[in-house]
Image 1: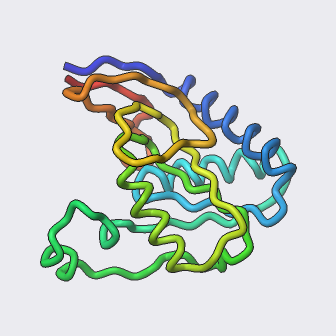
Image 2 (image 1 turned 90 degrees about the vertical axis):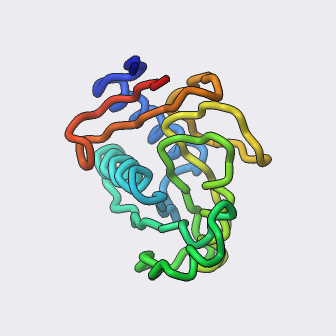
Amino acid sequence: MAKEIIDALSMKRALMRMTYEIVERNKGTKDLVLVGIKTRGWYLAERIAKNLKNLEDVEVPVGAIDISQYRDDLPEAEKEKMIHSQQLDFDITDKNVILVDDVLFTGRTIRAALDALMDQGRPAKINLAVLVNRGHRELPVRPDFIGKNIPTAMNEKVQVSMTEVDEKDSIEIVK
């Protein structure tokens, strides 16, 4: 049973608000790059970049990272079977990186993403932008930019749908 929490228009508004907050907190867009965690984080980063283009008339570099080889909850044998290539085609050294993901839950995905980013270079600063903060952290991870705080029970799942992948924009809680 799924309950829609956010529709397409509300998601668009949340991303626009996050975009304004990113510009304000970074005092503009100088040295700013967006890195999305595959898959939906990448599409969210692209949407934020499009908002930045419309607001500030700047092209902010957008990249994606695959954090699967950095996960601490996969057996080593399974990680070794995976084929990985780093997909950032720009340097993040001395840049202000906005790491983007769809849902922040335990914090383990973000820990893996930080490891992946550090293998790419040494950013001046890393901020975390998430569309949904659902709580239940296992690691000391705190988002800097939040689309929506959605308190959940442990037996619930937050499902983010995006037109690029799922043919619609919505956020649902699934029991």
